[in-house]
Amino acid sequence: MTPMADLTARNTLGFTVTANHAVSIGHPDEIAPALTQAKASNETWRVLGGGSNAVLPNQLDGLTMLMDIQGIAILNSDSDSDSISTQIEVGAGVNWHELVQWTLQNDLPGLENLALIPGTVGAAPIQNIGAYGVEIKSFIQEVQAYDTKNEKWVSLNNQDCAFSYRHSVFKNDLSRYIISKVIFALPKQWTPRIGYADLQQYFAGQATDTMTPDAIFSAVCAIRQRKLPDPRLLGNVGSFFQNPIISNESLKKLQQQYPQIVAYREGADQHKLAAGWLIDACGLKGYRHQHVGVHDQHALVLVHYGGGDARELLELANLIQAKVFERFGIQLQIEPIIF
Ligand SMILES: Cc1cc2nc3c(=O)[nH]c(=O)nc-3n(C[C@H](O)[C@H](O)[C@H](O)COP(=O)(O)OP(=O)(O)OC[C@H]3O[C@@H](n4cnc5c(N)ncnc54)[C@H](O)[C@@H]3O)c2cc1C
Image (cartoon, rainbow, N blue to C red):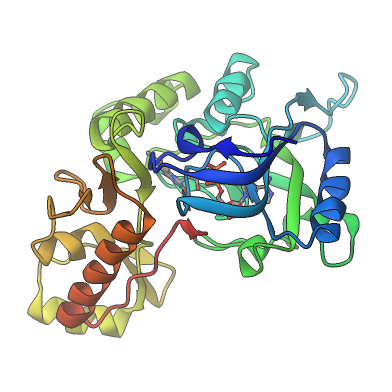
């Protein structure tokens, strides 16, 4: 147990954060005793992965569990040749991008569209991470977690996780499950997914049957590096707002006034709007509020220039929400977790 811990390097916004008590969880067996101790001392508690989807206050009271459980193991045996997928069991503290690289190095493609997403494997199911036309829900077979409500270990299958856009059963009650391991099923039959506009453009003219997982991985990395600010250079948590999903009728009404509005079909009855477009249309791209601001190239990303804190960032978020609501009648939902 570390009495005080500086978590400035463990949140990608780069806010100066001090935790009262921080404990590194390197093995699932350490979770229950840490919780028991926190309860006995009447401490509040929370879990932190890489801090890339978290807005932390300057001071974190109580216990902060840093999820550092490592390990990647292939579960199928060589004789299991009938199986249509390869199962891999991965510790919650494994770095997400390093897992993607490991799968490709081991000839287990599938996760390449999700390259370069910061953070840990244990956090990936929480908001059903997604990028470039793929969501992690397509690859999760099982999540192993400690159920703090019933004080027992549970195993949730894909359906139990109730995944949807940037959501899951875990997000319904963030203090209930502490994820220790995730089991992925990677289909042995690989299908390239390059339907997303940026990837289509990148591979323009190239036949799908000449595509390789490594080529898609490199494309995704190149596109992300071009479009998104690197948190090591400019603090951020990626997209700050979810893309709002609205009915086809609401979209039609908006299109009458704003013919340029950017929307993507979401099932038969709905469309997903580009939240970045809405923010940009309010004239807020590049807008600065004290030590934080709206990125000057990507309006969906809020950035920290140094010396700021969660209070300033949330003031900016509120201002953006108010402007977008005033103009479009749409309430933007914040994507990261506010602690
Ligand atoms: C530059 C940048 C780009 C990004 N791009 C994307 C993107 O394309 N798509 C996308 O979906 N996200 C994206 N994100 C957001 C973020 O990377 C993901 O949400 C990631 O999964 C968060 O992982 P983390 O370990 O940092 O979680 P944290 O920020 O540490 O935690 C997030 C939440 O998960 C909980 N949590 C973490 N680990 C566990 C665990 N083991 N058990 C239970 N609860 C846990 C925390 O308590 C918290 O509520 C981006 C972020 C950045 C900075």
